[in-house]
Length: 170
Image 1 (spheres, rainbow, N blue to C red):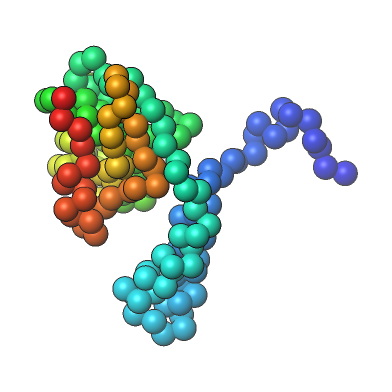
Image 2 (cartoon, rainbow, N blue to C red):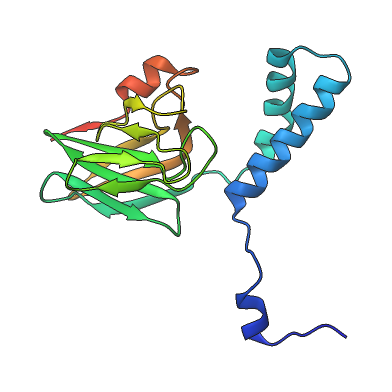
């Protein structure tokens, strides 16, 4: 008989919706690759199949930071950064292997604790095993808040123009 006490559940690894979607997309892409599709064809086919499963209109509002620095929302896997007159929204996961990034305030940099990739406050890759900048979310201003649209995630290597434009100017 299984143990249904809450304390037993606290020890169970929980998977977020974003983790589930990432893992599902990777599995589907693997199947298409095994069937002989090229990597880009498998990625395109996977995107068409998995995208309808995603929640739509998932946005999170945060107060615009008063000073330069980073605010991390672990629950929603969002990082909000104010840096040199701009505000950015980032995915909390390192683009190398999806480990949660840490903000290093003494260096004004992000660092991945797993393989030590480092990023500038604007998400630009500095060094380490990653090969691109941090993933940026679409952002817009709503009064004194920045609204981060997690359904609009831009990769520097795949959506260069959108990635470059994904910030607010204060």
